[in-house]
Image 1 (tube, helix red, strand yellow):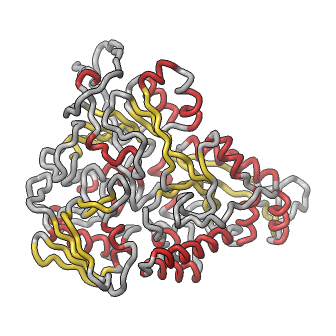
Image 2 (cartoon, helix red, strand yellow):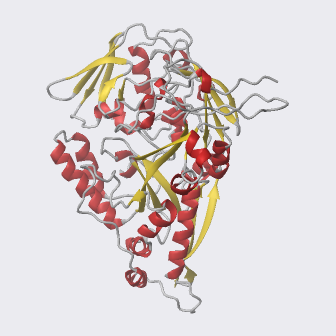
Image 3 (tube, helix red, strand yellow):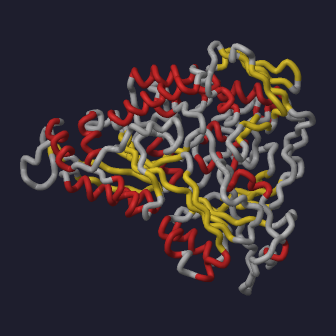
Amino acid sequence: MFSKYIFLLLFLFNLTSCSSKKETVYNYEGSFNSEKGGMLIDAMSGEPSNLISMIAGDSASSAISGNIFNKLIKYDKNLELAPELADKWAISDDQKTITFYLKRNLKWADGHSLTSEDVLFTWKLVTDEKTRTPYGSDYKLVDEAEAPDPYTFRIHYTKAYAPALDSWASLQILPKHILKDEDINQTFFSRKPTGSSYYKLTQWINGEKLTLEASPSSVMGEPNINQLTSRFIPDTSSQFLELIADNIDLMNINPIQFARVIPSRPDLKNKLALYKELGNSYTYLGFNLKHSPFNDIKVRQAINYALDKQEIIDGVLLGLGEPVASPYKPGTRWSDKNLHPYSYDKNQALKLLHEAGFNDSNHDGILEKDGKPFTFEILTNQNKQREMTAVLIQRRLKDIGIDVKIRVIEWASFVNQFIKTGDFDAVILGWSLSLDPDQYNIWHSSQQKPGQFNFIGYNNKDVDQLLEEGRTELNADKREKIYHAFSKILLKESPVIYLYAGYGLTAMNKRIRGIESPAPPAGISYNSYEWFIPSVLRRNEITP
């Protein structure tokens, strides 16, 4: 869903219409030298809300804007911090001051110089109380920011802030000369951006597609692939049909397609390469804690016991996933190996529900409390895995007398009409997380305004204190203890139920070259600007 750090995604192109089309057979064998040009075709399930990522907050917007804008620093293939707009940086001995030194001769796509004044302007925007952003808390910890010259940006913290560098690897820098007199919440720029990175926006047709082309003034140099376009196809089954028909080049596929469909078809094995990687994300069932009865911890714990997570992993993911007991990637130091998911225990679930005051007094199979049946609605977006997960949850909760309805909604409407307004009982969603363990934006009680990430309404003073301590603790071992304590409280209180951490499964047409295999820690897309399509493997450019 949302993310402070989201890996670069690429998008698709609609072939120009023509009166007839001949099938082209490609020979994918052989090695090819890198060359520039061509178009890469992809599909997205959700349409971006806008291309100012600090305002949008959704992964679709951030993925596309990440091709248009730059940050001061970035993560490299090994997940180490590396230069982007900043050539280098220095941290003071007391860890309270960071100085970034920008590269020389940086330009925006319109030819204006990109300087430290743009960085300072972006910081002021993201920390302005009028800016409706879920990301402001990270940058409000900066006590003072300054741009003493065009190539220097310096920030001062009152206290040392552990995730400081990580936060600056997330903030996309915006042009002051265009936005200085604009309302950032409502501006033409969100759909007609001027950036500095590899690509520029050339077309956006609502509900249909969005096209990017290589920017000749990119401060990062020229990408190999000239054109990226994203068609918006909410149904992933339709996306897969486009993939096997050779109308798109890559997509995230589901476990059945990965494990059964593609391996069983020689024609698909010949033209599609498969990639599997465990990302830094998880899927969850989240409750609106401002709605009864989900404000009762016993009810949430009962539902946690009532769900068989391994059944979901096996049934929905064909085993291509991992159980999770904390909001961190399994196997990392931040994921406490001593924590375990709630076991499937129907009797314990019923016991807790009875203690919470629910009984089936009229023997109709549905629990009631104060004469009201226990019924609620699960909302999710158009995502087959989440829909299948909802069905399994519905069945398991029926077994303990809870009536669940399922409602599937298009992504933009889901976010704007329900998530941002808090108009829901429960949701099935996912979090894509930063590499830093700080999750203040998601769980701190102060982050509940419209558009912020604590939309479930979680409020716990001990968690607030731990999150505040974790942000200012620089010792990694001490931070680990803080976040383990934080995770233990979340697991006990069950404001969300962790369902699984699924593997990222990608099918990519073999005409695309330059992908590193096996995938480095940052994933296969870390160097997408270096991918190329040999001219002999490109689609014919068809004209009317």
